[in-house]
Image (cartoon, rainbow, N blue to C red; front, side, top):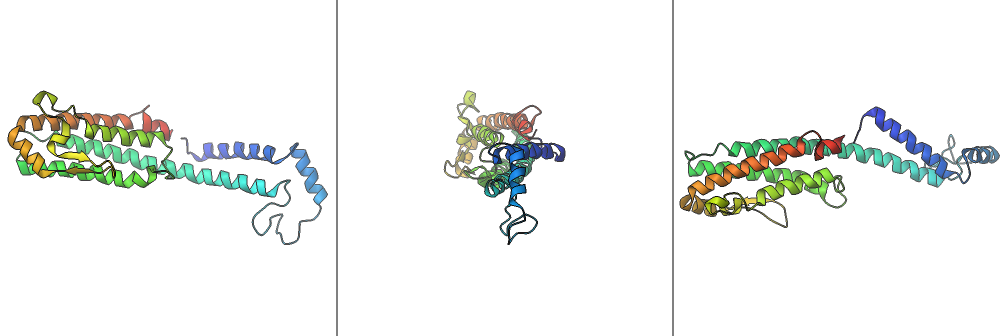
Length: 235
């Protein structure tokens, strides 16, 4: 969405012009005639406005008030959506970096270091989910924003994919003890399950981590890339 001052002003002027036409049963001239016929400003009003903010000189003060209230609310909503989606774009980039950091895990990495790095990624992923969870629920500022919904779904699917490590007899991060709770959307690491895989199929574990790191980072970077979901929504 283009949120520049110039474009927003243009959109609001166009919207207000349509509102004027809707508020008249015939034409703008009819409103002027009705205003002229009304004569003086009604008692209890100031400058043509009632105590409740209705413009009493208009043909339908309540309809005018409702329309302008809608215009003002939309202006606030669009700015809030732009701000939140910009934050999401930045955070998705951060998640891409966190996934890429996992590619540093190698055969020389100790078990404790591997566990620490995987837990660090899980924690960062969960912080991202919590940051935008309320925004994406019904009634939230990003509830109807496709780019945000797609970003959440794509990254969730990347974590849950069962194809990493298939050649080594493993089925994704689940065999490393990493899973996502369906109710909360939060990830967790089962250290005991990770240790078992490290002991029984260390090479497979390393392959899973490398494949996941590359896939997740690629998905996150693609969401943020020019011409893709998040930049398109912001534009």
